[in-house]
Length: 326
Image 1: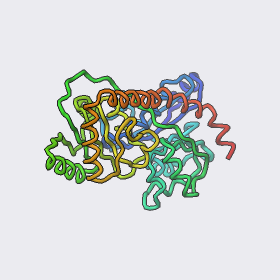
Image 2: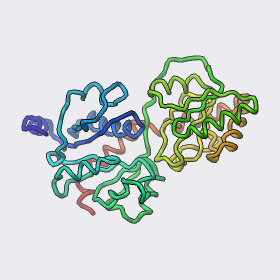
Image 3: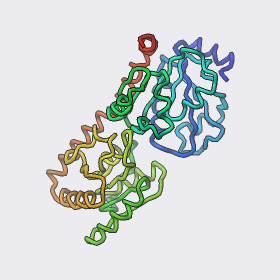
Image 4: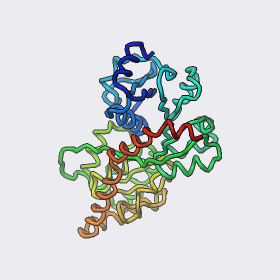
């Protein structure tokens, strides 16, 4: 609960108050992006932001709010705030919290599956909110439902990619397949029949472990879900590996460009195997490889966390007028 002392502190600081909510069980890119948006506001001088966590939240170093917020046992009371920020299934908790009428809501939409009637998030599209989509593909998907109550904005994902200790390239080919282990196994077997060895991991890793593996690999094959809202690991791989192979998963179409900054095959084992053979040839062509690397640098420069922060804060400054307009 926002106490009287909290309210007085916020009043003295000035600015609108915003409440977030998270049920953090394990690290995902979706949790990371909510944390990015939280810290965009937290690090600004214009807004006062708090966050409440579910009782089942896991507290370890993979939690983006660890350790600072471990002792913050704030109850979820969005009615005490000017604005609420929701993502994913946060809607269920918000709607059961007796929110105040007409409270402006910012709803972060991170996946095309929000437009799928079989998904639980679909039911919330009719709730009044200002929606931020992490890619144009996501915006197009939810717009196509005809159900969205409120304006839709697209802020293409930004990412902060930490430096990792320079290491030798230990792996010619690394396959990262926890989202699709069946294809990962089939691809490794297919390549082995062609005398191409791959280092393959089909379980989840802590982010720092994954980044170190990307940096230690020349070619990286990433296997997302068949549909994604954006797919941040592709950007991480573009930063660290020499060449990235990532199949079409809808949400990555706006920034994964075939034979420019990555190889972008169809999502099946033969197409992925063919892409690996192409990548091995490109490694032997320094001029072509450098073109890939320059294009990756341009892609990463655009998808900066600073650009995302600027666009988000610009929207938040106009939230009241946007809310009153629909």
